[in-house]
Image (tube, rainbow, N blue to C red; front, side, top):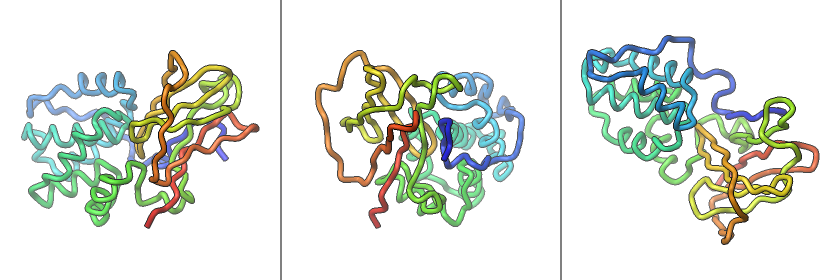
Length: 224
């Protein structure tokens, strides 16, 4: 099992190498968008590759502002920018042409044949992607040992479920951390105090921890 944080939907690499596309003809500054992705805790390199994959399937988006914005939003979410999740999902519901469907699927790193299933499942299960069953329900790992570039000096000790979807509080070495996550991204942040309320959710999502690992794994028990 991995010793470093990982998003399993990105292993192996879902996109070929590509430069950041130029969307200036559509009135968009992709360099600025890439910076915004980094600020939103996404990965600019993955953003560039996802966006390039989408544009390759719908070249008209290079000069069509609305179509370009659709791909930028989906690529930003795909790169791990959790804040774009709702906007990207909304845009995926309004694809007017076969080229737009192909482009959206390519931007997500999916086959167009599973695009509809992905959209449907994501509305109820933020951790679903077609490869999850092959990973036995494991989605991602966060934390890791600080000595090799991770976040924590000791293994996590306790996990509490928070009210927001995909959110958990994790106790490590006397400090509480908040995890926000979905299939494409994860963000850890230090909490100023212990969570005041603990919630329960019947969605099959749990955090797997153990005394011999500095990682916390998001696992989903299949509901269907």
